[in-house]
Amino acid sequence: MNKTIRNLLAIGIAILPIDIVMIWYRLTQTENFTTLDMIAYPLIFGGGISILILFLNKYLIKDTFKETFNSGKGIWFRDIFVGIGLTVIYFGMFFLTRATLYQWIPNHNPPSTELIDTMIDIANSPLLLIIWFGPVLWLGIALFEELSRVFLLKCLWNINDDKNWHIAVIFMASALIGVAHLYQGTAGIISIGLKSVIMSYYFYRYRRLIPLIVSHGLYDGIQFVFFVLQFQN
Image (cartoon, rainbow, N blue to C red; front, side):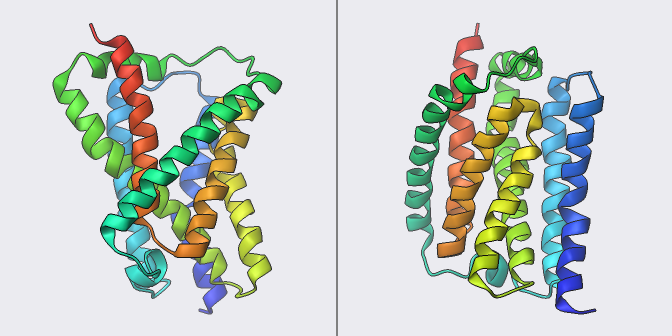
């Protein structure tokens, strides 16, 4: 099996199915996720797909973890500081897109109550707070989504060494990631896609995974904290 087929097969096994399922579910189902779903699904599916990605990387792509996910030079505490810096950039984009995209392209669909209901339940349960801000946020969301992003990028980059192809892949992968969040409306798709371009370009330049995980966890976590504070009794 040649290199191109192995890399496309890896994407077809680990990346595309979960995106297709999520897009299909959001387009066809009207029932909201319960609080248990919002906690269990990231852990089960995020954790399971993360293990699958690592397995495919080793036995199908035949690369080491370092070669695929962390080949750039760096040290862990600098990675953390870079992750904090990326978080600041993401929040800057958050406020900018709210003042522009979300005003220009309003979402006329009724807001989903599932996140609000989940935050209310979490805000009033110390155990759920620990689970959500611990394994769910850092393993089921941040680690899973960044492993998936980097694995998709690296598999496509492995097909061709041309720099223009690598840049094109950044935009293609970011478009796919944005569309996977279509439940947030057109402005949400564009906003998430733009954030993905920044994350993907950072990895293209520096090949370090930890800053992406740190920034993703902090970005989502800080927003969840504000939600929780609003809904605590």
